[in-house]
Length: 183
Image (tube, rainbow, N blue to C red; front, side, top):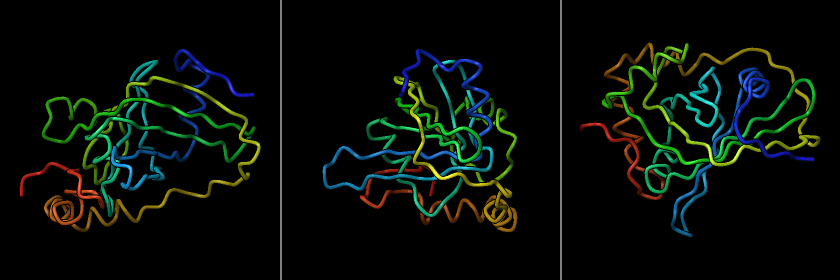
């Protein structure tokens, strides 16, 4: 039986930090727009408070989440226990995008141990925190983090990553504005 929580307590915080991956879901306002669901990993999640979280938005081939959050703020993060007792936690809220040019970026960035191709940080003010059983989620074993993205960014360097972002991350597949970096 699922349960609603007023805030993320220490027990849930410990559980969230122990998960190796989570999923982010967003959607545009337009009915014909594409709903987006993205997996996240590489220790890119952090708690900012009992009702506020953030994740490091790493450079990728698309920028749907950024575009949707900029347009309407709606976002859901979902964590599944693939090891141990079955459990799912969903964090529903209003997100905002913090890019490297923002004054608060450096202090937020320092909260993440991962070095790598961060194009922004998505901060989420939580409106609903809920868990459910997760009985249908398969049990899997964590082997290791993949390093390909971090390795690629290291090879490309800052200017190469920014060139890639300018080419692939300025708009969503529906044409919504996403990353806001100078041309």
